[in-house]
Length: 202
Image (cartoon, rainbow, N blue to C red; front, side, top):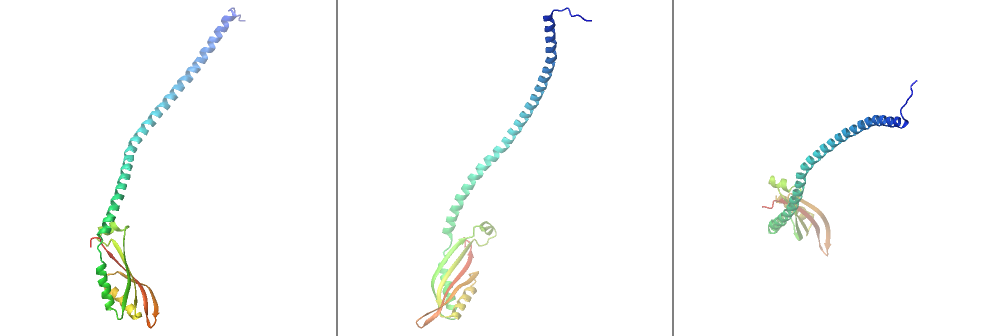
């Protein structure tokens, strides 16, 4: 039989010290494990930060290029507007030449032809302007709307045929033809659209 002759206070102190030593080992192990985990996380954070810095350095030139591209786009828009104005000024006036062609076609018809109204319009083919310029193709699409009267169907048909044979227009279209009669005068009211293409340098 074992009899403890030590004082009770001393026994309690020894037990407390023993428990503290046991728990100290556990706490030390947990602390070491926490430090290892934190060190690993810190390395991951540093690695991620380095990757972020690299990406930021790569993105910065792209952002500068975007700013430069936006500036160039605005300058191109301004230049394109100036080019449009210059091209509209430089389009040759073909009115006199067209009047001569129309007059010759009217004389060539088998009857009387009277042109009461002529409207000339020119629209730039914007979608194909670059391709047309590179291939030396027409850039402007012009159209002439003619309104007038003839003394009959045969005169109108002959006038339209003369316009087509002039080799100036690539399309001659009879839009409308209506019979009219005023007192003893009768004939045909017509509307004809002629289209042709031209380059701004011609």
